[in-house]
Image 1 (cartoon, helix red, strand yellow):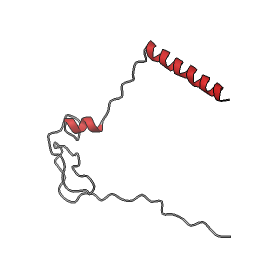
Image 2: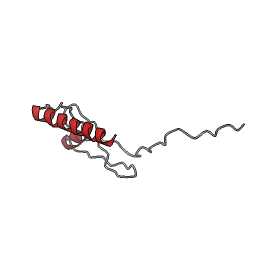
Image 3: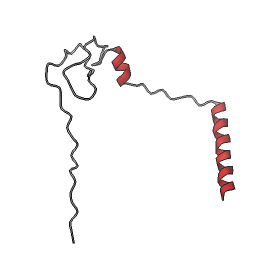
Image 4: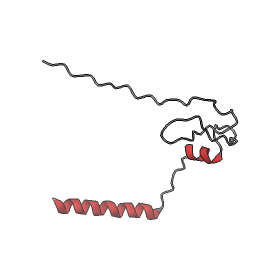
Length: 91
């Protein structure tokens, strides 16, 4: 009986940039594509964030529940009926 080979399950490490980090009041959004560099945005931050306004909006999304209208309920009910009819026709 052979024993199964064990695969390396450790995640690969992302190299950290070498160089000075931006100040605490400068946007710390990394400005690189494939390879880490020591480039950060550096614009002034919004209060209580590590990022400037545009990068804060890009990184943090506020969840607002969508209001379901009567038209939405009717459309969903109609779609459910159509799905049931298609299923029954296929049987």
